[in-house]
Image (tube, rainbow, N blue to C red; front, side, top):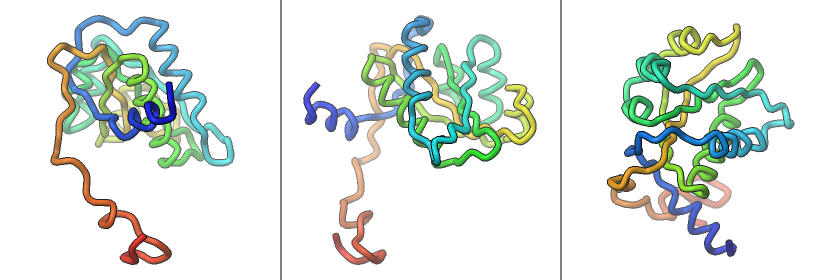
Length: 169
C-alpha cells in the first residue's frame, strides 16, 4: 500500500452500522485484538484490556448505553476496558487502531459509548477500579452498508490554530 493509499484510508474511515450475520472469523478477531494490543499508550503502561462480547451478552451490554443498536446488530462487540491507572486518551487510541485495522481487512466497525458505568461493570464482571465507557461493534459489512454522511467536516480554519486558540495556522 502506498503512503497515499494509507492516508486516504485514514481520512476516509467512517463508522459503518450495517453488518452481515456471519460470525467474525477467529483469525480476523485475532488481527483486531493484536492491533489493539500494539497501540501505543502513556508511558507504555498498557492499562487496558479487551472483552470480546457476543451472543446474548451483547444485548446485556447494549442495555448499558443509549445509542447501542450497532452492538445489537453486529456479530461481535469489543469492549475497551480502562484498567486502574489507565487514561481515556489511550482508550481512544485503541479504538482508532481497532477501527483502522478492521477497515484494512474488510470489516465494518462503529464506536459506541456506554453511558452507565456501574451496569457495564456488572455485565462484564469488571474488577474494582476498572471502567468501560466504550465498545467497538464489528462485523463484515452488509451489501447495504454505507457510511453515514453528515455534511463532511468543518474547514481546517475552524479547528486548527497556531500558538493560541483563534490564531490561524
